[in-house]
Structures are given as structure tokens and as C-alpha cells.
Amino acid sequence: MSFEVVRRRRHVTSSVGITLSILMLLAAPTPARAAGRARDGKGRLPGGVRSIDGAAGGGLTPWALTGSYASVGQFGASAYLTRLRTQDYGLTGYGVAASFDERIELSLARQDFDTGRTGTALGLPGLRLKQDIFAVKLRIAGDAVLDSDTWMPQIAVGLEHKRLHAGGLAPTLQALGANDRGTDVYLSATKLLLAQGVLLNTTLRATKANQNGLLGFGGTAHDRYELLPEFSVAWLLRRDLAIGAEYRFKPDNLNPSPLGEGLKEDDWKDLFIAWAPGKNLSLTLAWVDLGKIVPAVVDRRQSGAYLSAQVAF
Figure 1 (cartoon, rainbow, N blue to C red):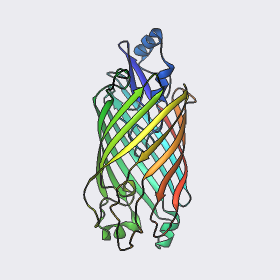
Figure 2 (cartoon, helix red, strand yellow):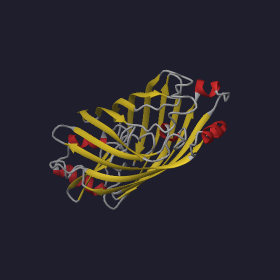
Figure 3 (cartoon, rainbow, N blue to C red):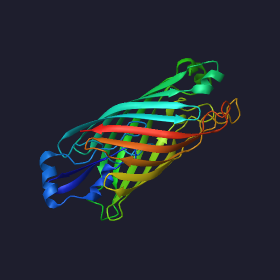
Figure 4 (cartoon, helix red, strand yellow):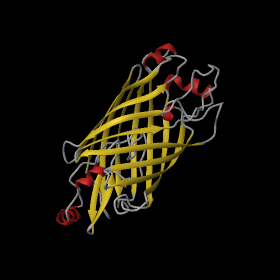
């Protein structure tokens, strides 16, 4: 996450993916440091890492923050790379983002999902599901730092438009009533408790995405938007190290299906540790539990390691 101080005020520019930078503000600037940051428009610590969908926030869920070193009236940019591996699947994500004026963020991300044993069982060995995500986020109220001594959170609205490239699995998804593109809309509220060194976030997401869009959008069982909550908490251990947890409720559009509960979808959760080894770099390591994915083929929970890195300017 990034913190910016402008016009003798401290501003957060956000972090992501289970980040540090926002909490790093707790290591806090004296008035002289604040003035220095205002002059160069950059904080000392990195902007964290990106969520799996490319938006600033936690690894599984967006926050109401915008991620880069941009301060008031400035542009900023970041790039990230993420790798997730469970017992039977693998996901690689990468992307870029730009923000302006601590108010608006644009991001572009690509996900590459290795279907592993499931693809082989379906007669599609080596199948990879790829998804492009274009996202925009707008801060509409509050300031995470300036309002840290009140109950007012920072609030933002966001949109994530996703397009799936399902390869040989596309006819099956169509038969299940799933579309190959969809748009999530969300509202996030982020509250920074400076004295306690804690960041809290709640996101409400309107979505039709199956497995975050990797199995399409909607289905014959359910083809309407659901409003679902997502939660994050992060705690600063020291100025360059934070730990936290996330929980993301998921829809269940493909259940029931001709496979019974074989396409049932579970909620996601993680525990993470984030470290800022340098000014422009942050790293996040997490244990992630994605529940069962296509239990008709692989009937066990999918948990594993998540590693993400971001450079921010």
C-alpha cells in the first residue's frame, strides 16, 4: 500500500494484496518528513501487491484504496505477478495498474488457470482457462488516514469486467448456461485504526461469476446477480511486516446441475504475511483455502501457497 502526504496532510494511496504500505503509515512521519513527502509526492515504502483480479486491496478482495505512489494531482503506476498452487490446480496472474489523484484507479489483469487432473478427466489434457479483467475503482467518500480518528471509513465503488477464454471447455459451459463474459460491481469500505495498527475492510460484491469467472458467469440453476460480502483484516507487526486474514463469500450458480452437486462452489479464505524489502517492492506469502473446485472430478478441498510481488512508482 502506499501512503502519501500532501499539503501537510497524510494521504494513503493504497496497497494491495494483503499489504503493508497502508499500515506502514503507522511508522509515521514527523512534520519534517511529511513536508518532504509532499515535495516529492512519494512515500518511503512500497505499494504492496495486487489482488488476484488486479485491483488494489487484499489478495482475495478489493479495498477502497488506490494503489501506487501517486499523490494529489499526480499519476502513479504499478505492476504485479502472482502464483497460486493447490493440490490439483495452478493459477498465474499478472497485470498493470494506473491511478490518478488518489481518487481513481484503472487496472488490466490476465489470469491463466491450469485445470490439471480435471482437464484430463474431461478429455482435455493440458487445458488452461484464461481470463482478461479490466477494472476501474473510484473513491467517493472518506480518507483512510485523515478520518482515522473518527468512525468514517474510506469508501469506493468499483467495476470489474471479465472475459473468459475457455478453450475446449467452452461448449460444456454453454450447455450449463454459463456466459463467457460478465461484470462484477462492488462497494468497499476501508477503516484504518492508527493507534492499534489495524486495517479493516468490508466489500459488498454484486456478481454472477463462477469460480471468479474461470467457469463462466451464471448458469441454468441461477442466472441473476447476488450481493455477497467479503472481509479483510491486517495487523502491523513492524513497519515493514504485516499479517492478516480474508474471507470471501462465493455464489453457487452451477449447483445443482446434471452432475448433482458436482459443481458446487465453496467460499474462499486466506492467511497472509506481507513484507516490504525495499522502497518500490513488496512481497506477500499466503496460505489459501479455495474449498472444493469441481468436486464431481476432484472431491477434496483445494488449499495451498499464494505468492505475489508488486513494484509500484
